[in-house]
Image (cartoon, rainbow, N blue to C red):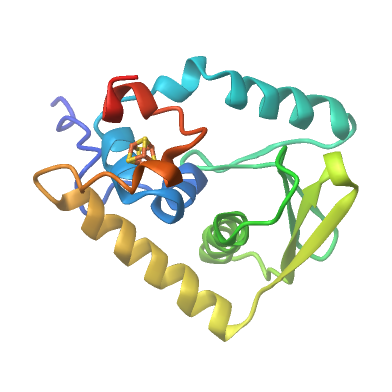
Length: 173
Ligand code: SF4
């Protein structure tokens, strides 16, 4: 018997770090992404981020959870995430909390996370406790609600779209 077709908008669809990152950046971006619109695959900014990621920590190994790829995890279950940007953003911590949640659901006793900003030689700690778990679960719920809406959420105000790889689609630039 063949399996039912995978529905990325379905309630059981797995959410990865990208979903959570886009939720925080722009719900419309999350909605478009889950429907297969992927201009970020050819975005210079994304390519730059991948180069930073690949060349900064050459000895670490990705942890592939299927729905999410974690940059690396160190002893004591500390989740590490590398960003090519120069400034911390709420989306970065949210992404790490989501990874903590996914690991915990697999039975890992997670201790917390760290976001690395190699361009400015800076790190920020992401605590993992009951509050962080509740935030991660709430983000999942919000993401599923956005994904389930039948029409695309409104665009953000234009100044907030600066640098977004979906600019062409949303604004016809
Ligand atoms: S261009 Fe603006 S409205 Fe469109 S997905 Fe990006 S941030 Fe959202």
